[in-house]
Length: 247
Image 1: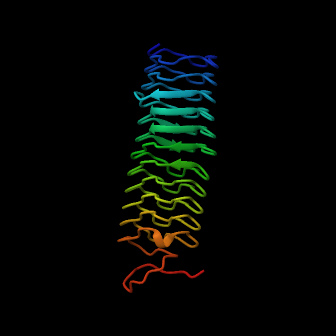
Image 2: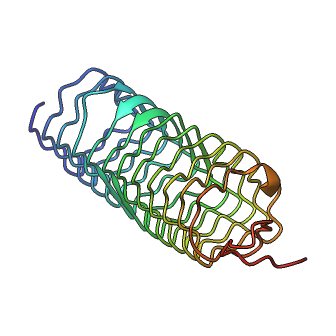
Image 3: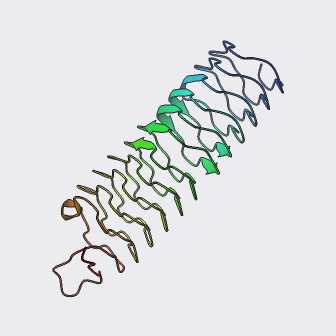
């Protein structure tokens, strides 16, 4: 099936485990509840496909996969790799993904409501403007990822690492950030209002006009050598550039 065309095919519930679908086209295909465990999907195209409830496990050898406008809601993905893959306008609602490599992946206008992602790699992934409100994103490694203007209100980011990421203007209000790492990150104009930041690392991060009003556990956060004028941070150093806003 390498390079085959399954355009608009009716394949609901299909058992495609272990198949070789390198370069295949599943554009607008119905793959609801299909099993793709162990399949090879290099350069496969699932644009507009229905994959709701599909199983994609043990897929460590897939990259440059197109999922634009596809429905991946309620999918179960584990031990998979989608490096350099695209998820523009993709539906990931209530999907459960773990142990996934998404380095250099591109997300735009992706639907993440109820999405759960854990123990994943997102090196230099693009999530600009993503709506990840209340998403579960635990134990991620996302160095140099781009999260500019992302909505992460109420998200669970415990023990996730975002060193040198660009989250300028992002909203982390009421997020769970215990143990998260934002070392050397760009967090200018980001909001951490009411966020749980106990044990969070902001070492050498840029926090110009970032807001920490009401943040919980701020006294246990690592704010060493941060730069910029941050709001809501109390500092005993007279030379510090921060401003403290009293409640």
